Figure 1 (cartoon, rainbow, N blue to C red):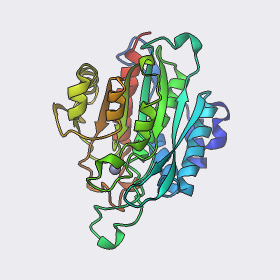
Figure 2: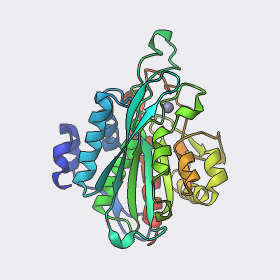
Figure 3: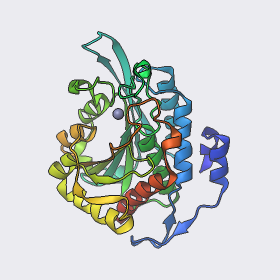
Amino acid sequence: MRSILGTLTESQKLLFLAPLFLVGCGSDLSDRPVFSGVRALSFIEAQVSFGPRVPGSVASRKCQNYLVNFFDSLGYHSQRQKFVHRDYRTNETIEMQNLFFERKLSSENQAGTRILLCAHYDSRPRCDRDPDPDRRNDSLPGANDGGSGVAVLMELALIFDSVPPETSVDFAFFDGEDWGEQGDIDQYCLGSIEFAGQVPAMRYRFAILLDIVGHLDAKFYREGNSEKYARELNDHFWEIALEMRPNRFVDSVGISIMDDHIPLLGARIPTIDIIDLSYPQWHTSSDLPEYCDTTALSDIGEVVAELVYREKK
Ligand SMILES: [Zn+2]
């Protein structure tokens, strides 16, 4: 893991020093590392320790630097995509920033040769579903809503660094996904809209978005827009998911969600959203690491890893 050790907390370092366990898997590769739900949970804790990653905040900046250091250490080419959003309700102007990490392999830049994995890293500026009205203006801790998707992608990056898949994987972390007030649909997904306007879409075979994936008893249904607009990819994902983790994934369509996959679909990248909104602490001040679960994190991580390893050049 090279100089990455310098960017980690003491407990994360201990996890790195433990041997990487290798397992046989359904892909042609005989062995690949096991996804560590324990380490993924530690990545959630690290993010939450910065404070709510509300766009433009000090905590957001700390999280950006944390992610850039992490991916730099793994040899990725880092890009900070800065943009400004003006909230038309408050007239506030907020500087936002997407983070984009590319494997820089010039020979693999032809159309459809890469995979994009993504999540939002921002925290909602309000806990508007909190049972306590006095806390509804607090910023969201965002352990699961934001933190879990990022954490799973970080752990996947470590796995892919250890045993590289045939297909190159890039990572995108969006800002401003959860900025809007309830019902103010135009002020959600701000980072992914910005990203989708600039991404070289043809390069990507497909993209997978993870959001709210780490809670105890998480149960995943096919998300409606993914099913409608990226059916082939969704079928492929669900086939692997049901094969590997039949108790975690349900083979029926659940709700349709406006999330960061919509702008990517608009940019013609087949994209699915893996999300479970039936999280009791959703948009409350209790969205904390204690409600996240190492098994849920490793279940989703293992399925995404398997899907990536099965992709051929
Ligand atoms: Zn949210």
